[in-house]
Amino acid sequence: MGKFHDSIKPAHQAFIQQQHIFFVGTAPINPDGHVNLSPKGLDCFRVLSESQVGYMDLISSGNETSAHTLENGRITFMFCSFAGAPLILRLYGKGKTVLPGSEEWKTFAPHFKIYPSTRQLIIADINLVQTSCGFGVPLFSYEGERDIHFDWARKKGPAGLQAYVQEKNLVSLDGLPTSLGLQD
Image 1: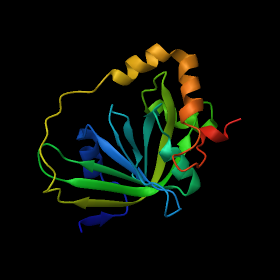
Image 2: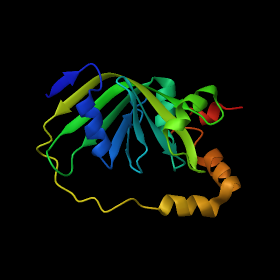
Image 3: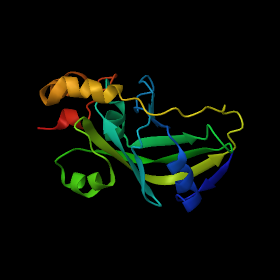
């Protein structure tokens, strides 16, 4: 079952900072809707306080996290140790999307490296931290980050990225609006 904590402790933050990948999970309220689980990398995750975290989110083929957190806020982050001592750390909370140009963007964006293809920030207030053994997680060696996204974004250019967002990022797989879809 693991150990539970009501906040992110310094040891948790140190563990998070050592990881090269994390997973974010969200789901719609509708029991027939699709649960989303996305891997993230690129040093985009930040612990903002003992009860708040966030990550910089790049334009991609879907925008389920924004739609689900807009609908119900539920979000879970999972970090696994793939090297060294085994450990799994989960952060449970309520998330929201922060869009470029918003007042909140001015507060949160300085914590992240913002790219031309940054779509949004996902910010979450954490109400439960769980650690567990991770004995079943295999060992893997980190080779580095991929640059394919940045090559793709450069080729698209600003107008191409905006068109892609309009086509792919305004509603979820289940037809729920995203924060981008609600912009004027």
